[in-house]
Length: 283
Ligand code: KIV
Image 1 (cartoon, protein in one colour):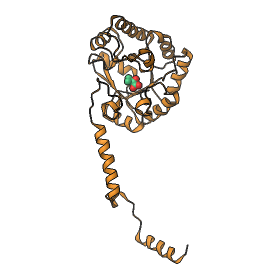
Image 2 (cartoon, rainbow, N blue to C red; image 1 turned 135 degrees about the horizontal axis):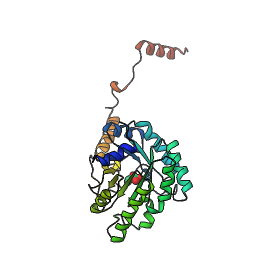
Image 3 (cartoon, rainbow, N blue to C red; image 1 turned 90 degrees about the vertical axis):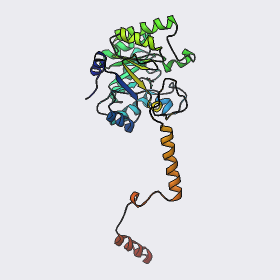
Image 4 (cartoon, rainbow, N blue to C red; image 1 turned 120 degrees about the horizontal axis):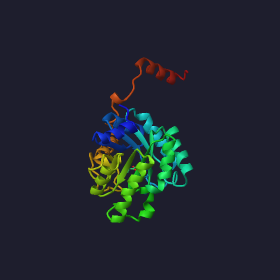
């Protein structure tokens, strides 16, 4: 069944946990669809896990469109949410609408995500008014890494906890259809979840959220540069990939690969004709 913002909101009402994973390419997205994922997030985390940057700040609109398109070609059922990258919406409400529109028209996304609370309610309203669903993102917001000053967990102090709750209510009021809560204490995330009508999707925010999201390289242990403590590795991709790469290298060097099974045949007759023609100098 095709997931939409309506079915995702219904999942909160039905107490049916929402599953979301990041994907950035056709093949991975297709596998996730086949596995039954509800939402695929084309996250700007692609800057780190796909492009090798230290953070998400260098990611461009063109990067997001390129990967969003690839994901869209691979999926039928999941809702595709694509991140608005750094400085594609912070600059003005106009930029926010134009760039959200590009992610839908060129990137074939179904919805967009942006980081921030009260300060961005006008942006959320304007994008939603253009019939583009918006997912908000609160708590640790990687695009603000320079102003957050290295603190990952957000909301441990009363002031910040109050701001997070206010922000969650503000994005709900502005028309966001869901909100990501990243690195927020479990009890606070659960309290927010119970006190807003839109689904919360947690990452490092505990089991009290309406859904969960992970970066797929983290889930598969494929990205060793940073391994957040909230990540559960559901497979050891590093080991599986490295063992396969090594076997390929060893078998190629030793001549075990390729065998005739991995090669193409031609008729002996034609091959013999080629040799005699070559030897006699005929064309
Ligand atoms: O870009 C991303 O992958 C994200 C998730 C961590 C929620 O925003």
